[in-house]
Length: 202
Ligand SMILES: N[C@@H](CCC(=O)N[C@@H](CS)C(=O)NCC(=O)O)C(=O)O
Image (cartoon, rainbow, N blue to C red; front, side, top):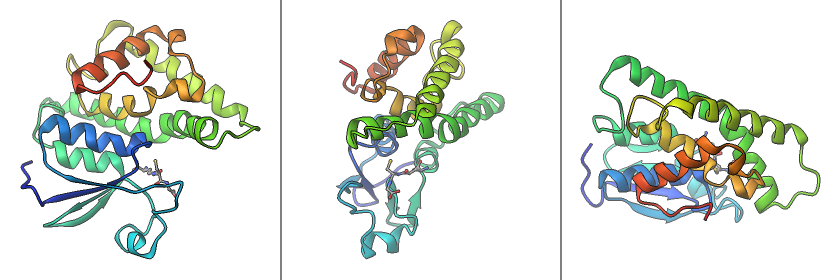
């Protein structure tokens, strides 16, 4: 897609992997946008102004000058990247990319992102142990998938990698040491380099 300078406003919290997905894709594609920092911890997603744009009270939220608001991180990155090299041309590879995007939202994010939030941001003393076992299981599944490939789909970076790296790169903040999952560890570095972003895990 192409956008002029005033066409896209992104409401996002910079500590959120879901929000950073939008930044990574827009920056990679050279799409201009205005980022409005919107803190979840300060409940800035619960103001009447924000709820009027997204009744779900969540970031990220993309507001397109010509169409209006669009929520859900993976819907937003799909819209921004449609027609770009971040989405495979081949129909089956594209379906595989969707497979990983749905898995990310249903299985990965509810484990790894929630564990990180509870440990790193809420410093909860009573962490649900199933969050740890679920997070370890998703990282093991990813490590097995990456044993004979550099990217999740095909031979190049796609939205599947962008969505999955968003919280995996913060695994250390969930006290998950990626050295236990060496393929995932190397893939995180690879994708961070491709996206020209800092190595979150140092
Ligand atoms: N499935 C949504 C999840 C969005 C989400 O959970 N956003 C969090 C920040 S990562 C949020 O805004 N939480 C505030 C709240 O739910 O009150 C997506 O991918 O965009």
